[in-house]
Image (cartoon, rainbow, N blue to C red; front, side, top):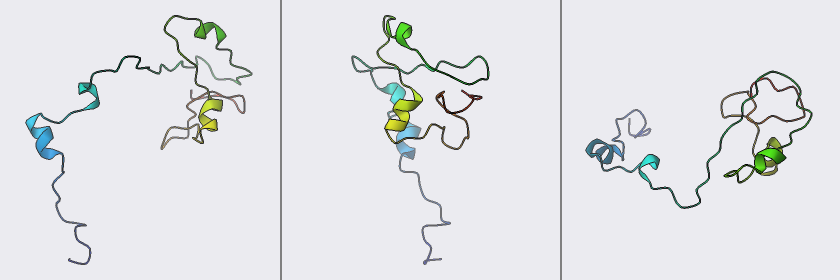
Length: 100
């Protein structure tokens, strides 16, 4: 149906040839820049109400650059949930943390 084209019609994926030939570049193929940082989640070991988070000892550890909390994420205008899930990503003091 011309009025709805290209919906419902086969369309070649624009990356298909590069991927099939092995010339496509992926994130894992890229060299890390000097100073690249990595995030490491710290998981809760029990369900409960978080009354405070003190990262001061962690920040003294060699190689630790910073600490990101729910407050930081919310300050950026982001939400404290993973896309498509109702689970919190970061513990906060607003409600009991069950799925961190």
